[in-house]
Image 1 (tube, rainbow, N blue to C red):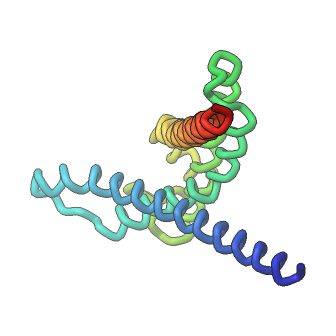
Image 2: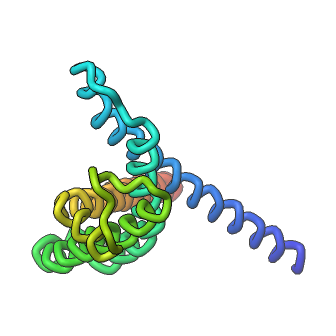
Length: 178
């Protein structure tokens, strides 16, 4: 019995590691897409690209989002968007909080790394957060809703698979009765 429990613990740990790696990989891909969105137009216009600033800036932001994703997924379970009218307001408010939180976390990280994306680095963390918020809250709001939407699609897919399996079991059971 102890070896069965240990095997289950080991399997759960591996699943957890795979989930975390998948989460970070997904946000890395998102960061690379943002990087190309920023750099391709500059390259096309023949402008120089500050590669280190762009890479560190976007990836820091994406990894802050990755760190906050478990909270977003929890909110998505708490208020499934499939139950539309009742869940839109809490998610809208949560998306604003998510955006404010990412800006509040990201600004001091980039300031500490020396990669703050402004001509003149801010004098304080508060000023840095203000600069990030002036870039717009909408990016964080969109990222929040993207996570919740992907979660809803996944949940819908899982429910469809369950209904298929139940239908097959009913078909097999009715064939046995006939």
